[in-house]
Amino acid sequence: MYQSLDRREWLARSGALAALGFLAACSPRLTRTGSPDTPVRLHLNENPYGPSAQALEAMKEALGEGNLYNTRRYVDEMKTLLAAREHVTPDHIVVGCGSGEVLNVAGLLYGLNSGEILAAHPTFEGLQQYAEHAGAVITRVPLTETFQHDLKAMREQMTQNTKLVYICNPNNPTGTVIPGDQLRTFCEEISRQAVVFIDEAYHEFVEDQSYRSMVELVKHNRNVIVSRTASKIHALAGLRIGFGFGRPDTIGRLGSFMTGSLNVVGLRGAIAGIRDVKFQDRTRDLNREGRDRLYSLFEETGHKYIRSQANFVFFRTGLPIEDFRVKMQQAGVLVARPFPPYTDWCRVSVGTEEGFVRFKKAFLQIISA
Image (cartoon, rainbow, N blue to C red; front, side, top):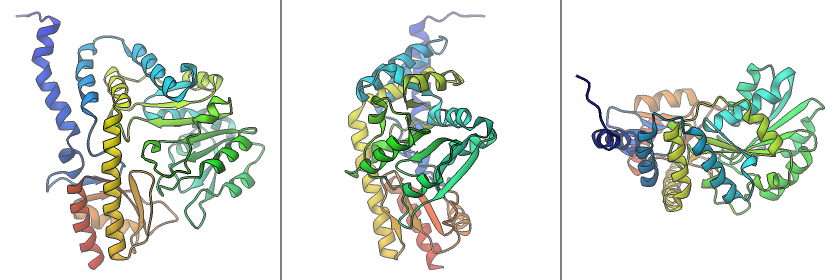
């Protein structure tokens, strides 16, 4: 027989199950450290510690709104929150299904009709790959010998048909940053001819004092788009919340192509996570400790590495990356895909201390063999 439930009773019955589900999903032991039979996830630059307690509480509360079309309310709240923090207006902000959607839409719009997109190589390829499906022409400019963006070469590769220049800063997979003064000069110059898209997915992890966010150029009405995400420091990768900053006319155009696939649970979690500064500080501390553990290991074993401004480290394995990946996976550790032309280098995410122990054990076994 049908039995009605009022809101309070429904929440009481579902709250325990919801809490268990969120705690399980966000437990570092389950997500990245794993059991002995579960691989350690060090291949996707995930936050191994899960969302903050405040974010978890907000998401549990949001379950009670799952029957409501409340997305717009929280999109507006997020825009207002970000606008106040970055000293722009809400009209300068678009919210997407992860920063990946912001990247994809930009790649689509500026890659149509054989539009040319310029990017470093190797770097994050999401925007470029999506743009190629729209018929874009992609020009990839190799990094310098010190694994930095070659801004001079990128300028020289500009053509009349260049519609967008993509820069990932800090760069993925190298973890390097472009000094703020250099990047600002580059953006001011190039944005007179094409859109400059700055991907700041790892913005919150940067400690290099020369770094500057290019949101400051958005405030000056430059032809620049900046994307960020709740996936990394806020640990909401599976809930797909990201955002972009740009001129209101540019943001309006991007927004008209968004799919509207956002969800209330993710939005409320991201809003709470952005406000939880203490959690972010603690995550940065843990990330720094994890990077230092990796640095020490590579120094002890004589393996070259790049000091990173993100939550991963790029290091030289000494053997083909495909062979290394297979051997690591057989030992229960997942590491990142190849990044040609660095075919004997590996990107490894910063994990928990327990995850590092398993990585170190597998790594030492492989290099000793």
